[in-house]
Image 1 (tube, rainbow, N blue to C red):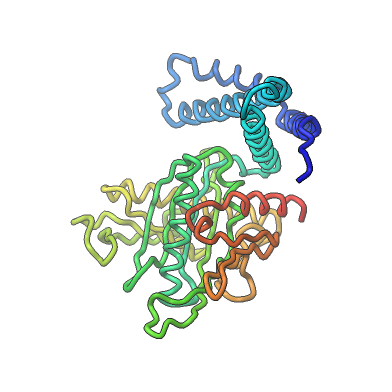
Image 2: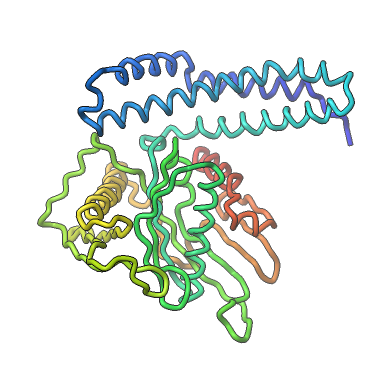
Length: 364
C-alpha cells in the first residue's frame, strides 16, 4: 500500500473548508447571531411565545453553525502540528490518521449542507410512510422503513414526534406520519421521497417464497407563520375516533383522535398522539397546512411532482431497491450508490445514500 501524503490530504481538506466558509459566509453568520442575541434579550420577549420560540430557535441554529465552522477550522489548522508531534511517539501516527479521517468526514458532511439552499431546506420535516403494493408484506415493509428513519434520527440526535400511526390487521402499518426537528431536516430528508422496493423471502409465506413489496415515502416542509396558508373551515371534514395501538388495543377511552379531510384536494391527515381532541385537531391542521404548502410550491414552480414525485408504488417509479434474497444489496436507482450491508441500512445507517442523493439532486 502506498504511503499516505498527509500534507496533500490536509491541503485538500483546507481548500474545501475555505470554499464552505465562503458559501456559508461566516462574517454574515456572526452578524446574524449578534442581531438575534439583541432580539432574544428583549425583556418582554416571551409575551409572544411563538415569536420568541422562532427567535431563540434561529439563534440556536446560527450559533451552532458558527461553532461547527470555527471548530473545524481549528482542527484543520492543528493537523500539521499533530503529525509533527506524532512522528516521535509510539502509535502517534495512527492517532493522527484517525483525526485526519474524522476531520475529512466532518468537512465532507458540512460541504453537503452547503448544497441545501432551497427555499425550505432549513426547515423541520414531516415524513409520511404508506404501505403500497404487496399486502401484508408491504405493511410489514412500511414498518421497517419507519424504524429505519427513526433509528437514523436517533443516531443524529434529531427530535422526532410521531403524530399518527395506522396499524395493519395482521402485521406492520398502513401508514404513519412523524415530524423531524433538526437544522436542515427537510432539505436533508427530502431526497428520501419516493417508492422503496423490498425483495425478500417472506416470513408470512409458509412455502418460504420470495416476495416483492413497496412502501411510499413523502417528505414535506413544516409550515411557519409567515407562510399564510389559508384554509376555509367549510372545506374541511372533521372525523373523530378513538386512538388505538397495535392489535386494536385502545390507548384512549375517549374519541380524541382526529382525521381531517381537505375536500378540494382530497388530502387526508390524522393525529392521535395528544390526549385532547382539541390538541389533536390543532396538530392535524398544522400537518394539513404543510401538505398544502408543498402543493402550492409545486404549482408555483409548474413542476407538479418535482419534489413529491409519483409515489403510487409500482415497478416504474422506484427510487431505491432493497434486496435481502437471494443476495443482499441496497441500491439507489437515481445515484447508483449501493452497499451490501443491508442490516446496517435498515438500522438507520443511510448517511451515504442521503449524501449521494443531495449531490445528485444538485447536479441534475
